[in-house]
Length: 282
Image 1: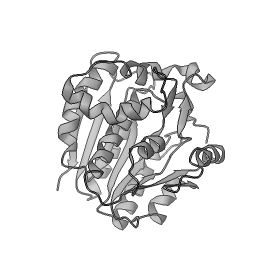
Image 2 (image 1 turned 30 degrees about the vertical axis):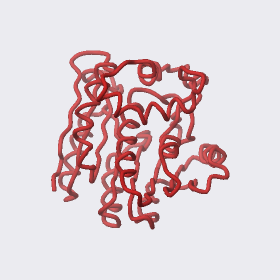
Image 3 (image 1 turned 45 degrees about the horizontal axis):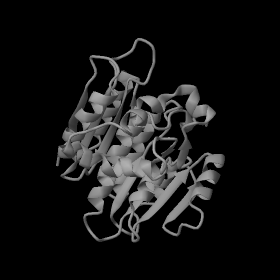
């Protein structure tokens, strides 16, 4: 329970995961029918980038700090627009002093018929999240273990939506919990979209994680890998990844447009690469 996202808010990994999140939400909005977002490790919602925690690491400067005033070609700019609009909604005076976590980004993009279930286990963080969404009838905040929610809250009554899984990776076995949680959730709701974030740090664990996903029998698994530096001899966050289950047919093409633009801006040391790999097809 010692992980605090305030130290890492707005870093390169947040940028990539939240850009993917916005593209999934924009796809869901193409139909009028309501959808639900279930955020299993929601955090506190908004982050002060001038806080002691954020200033201690300065990680946001290598992430959203590089994006907020950057120029992109028209295609990439259009795909990044929903994400950057969500960030700018917290920074009306320009620059970037505050950063929205995944529940605030989702809530910013939702329509009046859509719903958000924001789940957070840490008592203080859950209390802050409840205060953030106080009086918002479209959002339900629960102090709960996000892994348990994958069984208890699926399928949602809307029968459309996204499960966003962004665990802290501060305890051993988190990759196993990702696979087990996904298998349990997919049995209950095979038609849902799932987005699972993971750090690129322990390369051997990632190989095992991908192998387990391939052996799970779950179809339609798109793996997104984004490195900012080559593998380090000392443990460090060299990149981040996301596995999207049941990705929209538009997603791969969108990412092939936007990821090169992000990589050019965020990579810090060569050789570093990004990739899209189908772990399982239809």
